[in-house]
Image (cartoon, rainbow, N blue to C red; front, side, top):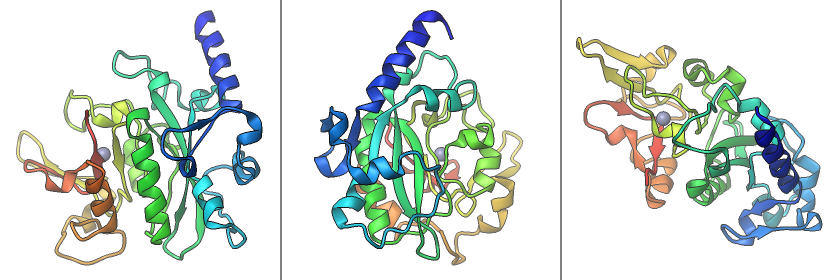
Length: 257
Ligand SMILES: [Zn+2]
């Protein structure tokens, strides 16, 4: 990181201390003083993602406030630099947002989730995951792909729900919409990406998800057109990889501009 970049990151870190974009404050509205950061956020913002949270005392308003967006501060930048984020001409760090959200596991327990997306879809993603939470949609895990060294196969195999990753589409040289933070993968182990190589070999990604490649079967976490995630993402203008013709990416929703 050069001197200018360091200065820029310090400024971003400072901004982050006083900035919390909050779902209940209407999408896009930003509070700009420290005193406006909601108490529930102050108490939980330093807990690592995956932490189970007892929300029995939380009001609906408190739960709303747990879905918020922040600029990428220095601490988050350190986690992603050289992993999911690499210097490039497609997306700047200022265009990305770090989201903190809640999700319910399959036993109905609440956990803290985290995700990085493009600022252009941040409000959509917050609203979608707020509704998934309200309707107890099961999600197994939601941490940054950087916790798996930005290795998509490892992240998918752990059934990790995630979004931003500066990478190409598997088996191609084409940049994925994940590279701009415009695509979200949900419960990927149970909703694998299935494609054919040039030589006609069918590949299931992650490999561990092969037993979920047969979509005529019924199983937990399965995304199809009757699924709540499908309904919410498509209502917000996203397309679903399960509707692609040449390949099927059942975990994948994207909103490319
Ligand atoms: Zn994807």
